[in-house]
Length: 255
Image 1 (cartoon, rainbow, N blue to C red):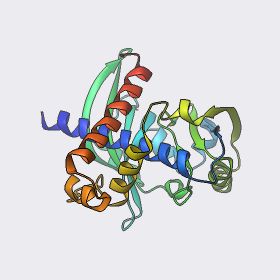
Image 2: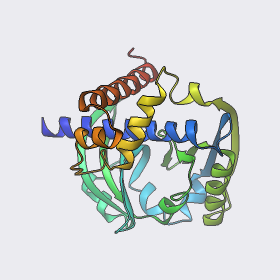
Image 3: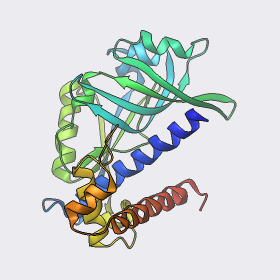
């Protein structure tokens, strides 16, 4: 029950992270009318000649779902991922990978006869810092790394994506870069009838730390800062979360 609740809360936080990125896309002046999607791919043989060998010999495939939070003090990311372990490997062996630590095992499900574990990991690999300070570009859920290779899906402004791509080239130049057709911003992320006021409330709530881990910021404080009623703030944020839930449900084919 507790793990199920934790899973739902983390999923909610990841959805809100995506919404924050959508807000950046909509309101950052440097952002063009169209977003770009770029994919960075490394072959499995290339990864075997890097420190990722420690990972892909234990984890056949790891799919990125979202960032739970970034720990600036300890220079690490806490990420939600889905993993398929290599044959004979126990989930506790994740801790033997120098840059990964198992933080929380959320659940396991059978997919096509394979055990897929949903976990939160603590990641200190040097590549997590690539693009960490880039505004207007981010890694999309669905990015993955495994024995057959890795796929990094980037979306955002051309300048932001170029900065991230250059960072990966500097880490290891043996990669394939492909550009996907530009995506209209309203189709890509929001695609809804969110009002400017709703987005303004969300932006302020985010900046005040309302959605941060262990945050003590209340809706009343956001309301006071906005100069509007607490119930209005709650209504705006609830409407936004409902919209994001619908978008995810559509993507999953359940709506």
